Length: 142
Image (cartoon, rainbow, N blue to C red; front, side, top):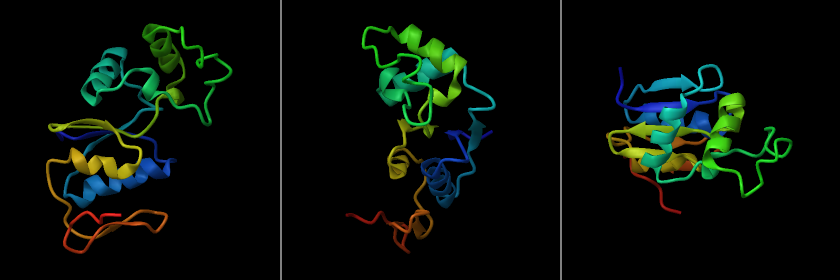
């Protein structure tokens, strides 16, 4: 079992790019297809705490029932938001990555580089053609 976990949606380009950068570091992570196997409430709480974000910060609005469920109501408690994520895992933003160095919601995908326990092993270009890592495995500064 790997000490790197990605909560992944293979239909999401950001998630695919993040997974590819993890693998570009020579790491084969545990890939949790969270729409098929949603993380437990306790796992989510621990993940958000490690990432230093609140439950609301982890919600995805686009392409989800966010509006229909009234989740934009600022008075909703974390427990109510977690209830919604449990009932509709698509509400969990992605990708989340957990490593021994921390956890992050990797939006943009290159945020994963801050918590990987191994360096990039070569060049990496995102699906949209943006070069992120040079041939020496160094992050390209914008």
